[in-house]
Image 1 (cartoon, rainbow, N blue to C red):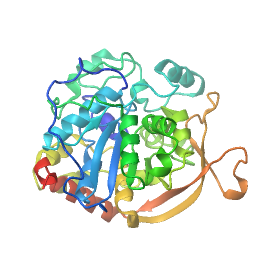
Image 2: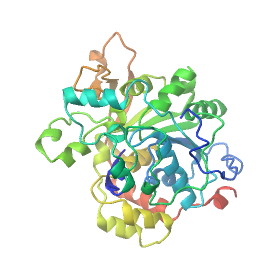
Image 3: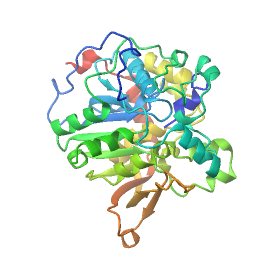
Image 4: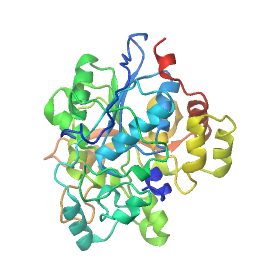
Length: 387
């Protein structure tokens, strides 16, 4: 989600990236070389940002194998978010975890189309990568929006610019297909940004979804239109669905694919807010990650991505859930373009093969915070992972 991109107001791929990336590469890391066959495995797909690293630290802290990180275009372009992934890994000596750069563009959407839709249906409070290009803001530290997707804003890297590089042997979608084929039934796919790479993997390999363990989503708000009208613009922002709306067609492909289980952290992701007292508590143990969180995470937004990660790692944290069949509005003429619609079985459309999803309504706040605290205060390094 975009909490870090917006709370960092000071800094807001399928093609060749050799000219854009640093030249050194991380040491090789085989996630399964010293682990047991039953250890859970995960690929995390996100629009990574300077303090957006907590989800992969949560996974490592829980003893999961992080097979790799994938970047996508949502808050900013996939190249910029991939560089943030590399930079935050390097900060904590975790550069052995591979990073794969995702597709520059959504399946159909572009900045021009997105802005044309806004002209007819209203402006979103957060426009992500498709906000109008603002080179002045980039020079002052914002992540790139619109314009050239290969553009890099070095001023945005408050965590430091990476000296390690993304993997160049395959695309993000190819990497996900490869890993799910290698470990059928074992790999969780975590998505806290756009669904573009996952949709490409689904189309690339018809068995990809069914051979994965699950798909866990940050996004999919429902019945929040009134909240978008009666409160502040910030409240409207908290209840907008940019992760799905930046690529509605990919969202629909992903949600109608044959994943054995699909879990949504939608409305529930707004439940637990970041507070200064909690940031102070995290910073009682000083390390590079708690420094970044303390200095840059901010207190305007909830723990969006962390909530989805926590529910994936420990489903018992879900205190209340429901299930229903889900569709995504892919009508460009609709004001709900990119939003989900839920159905009970008796009323689900017969002309579509919609999937039944698990929709979490309430999370154990204390359990979530305990998971975050352990993850950031006791992060492993590559040396720990290789033992």
